[in-house]
Image (cartoon, rainbow, N blue to C red):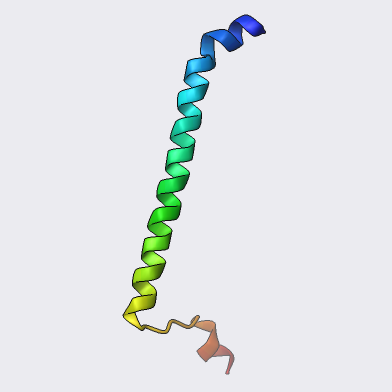
Length: 53
């Protein structure tokens, strides 16, 4: 088991780096989109609001 871990340790390390970078990128894009949407001044409501009333 230790031999397998030593063999693939670098691959696991790069995989962890890729996962972390993808999470940071996703959260950054979401934050940017939310900020841009908030600054536009558009008020969105779900479609169900009109149907229920």
